[in-house]
Amino acid sequence: MARKFFVGGNWKCNGTLDEVKKIVSILNEAEVPPEDVVEVVVSPPFVFLPLVKSLLRSDFSVAAQNCWVRRGGAFTGEISAEMLINSNIPWVIVGHSERRLLLNESNEFVGDKVAYALLQGLKVIACVGETLEQRESGSTMNVVAAQTKAIADRVSHWENVVLAYEPVWAIGTGKVATPAQAQEVHSELRKWLHDNVGPEVAASVRIIYGGSVNGANCEEQAAQPDVDGFLVGGASLKPEFIDIIKSATVKKK
Ligand code: PEP
Image (tube, rainbow, N blue to C red):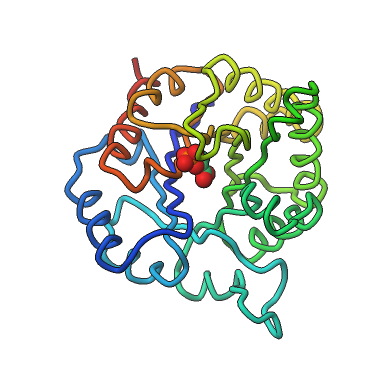
C-alpha cells in the first residue's frame, strides 16, 4: 500500500506575528509537489494557529503542538481537543520529547492524550524516540516499543495517526541519525506494529523521521523505504523547508 509522504513543520515556541506572516508567505509562494504526492502540515504556537490557518494556502494544513488529555474544564493553561476541533484545527502533535522530558509526560499520559484526541476527531502526530543514554545502552527498540505500546493499548483505529520517530539526541542538535539508523528503527517499529497491532496497520501507518532534518540531508533520508516523511523543527522556520517538502519526489524515482 502506498503511503503518502508527510512533512510536518514544528515551529515550537518560536516566532512573532511578523515572523509568522513571513514564513506563511514563503510557504504560500513555494512550488511544491502536488497534494497526492506530499501532505504538508505546519504547527505554530497556539496563539498563532487561527492566523496561520486563515493565511495559509489551502493545500497545507495546521497542527497544534499539544492538547489536554481529556475534556476541558478547570485546567488552567491547557487547550482541549474539543477547542481545536471547534476552531477547525485538524491535527495535533502529541508526545513530543520536549514535553515528555521537560514536562514529565509519561508513556501512559501520552497514550491517553492520543486516544482522547482521536476520539474527538483530531488527527495525531504521535512522537516516540530514545535518549542518547538509552541508545548507547542498547535499549532503543525497547523504549520505542514501550512508547508505541502505550498508544496501541488505547487506540484501535490508526487511520488518523502518523508516528514520528524522533531520537532525542538528534533533536535540535544538528546530529542527524544516519539514514541507516533511521531505517533500522522505522522497519523495527513497522514490524512491532505488524506483530502487535496487525498487518494492515503496519503497512499503512506513516512513520516519519525527526531530528535535525534539513535541506541537505532530507533526500537521502527520504530514500529509505520505511521513512515516510519528516517532522522538522529548526529547518521548518527557514526557506529550506521547501526543499524538505520537495524531497517527497524521491519516492517517485
Ligand atoms: C522537532 O522538534 O520535532 C525536531 C525534529 O526538531 P529539529 O528538526 O530542530 O531537530
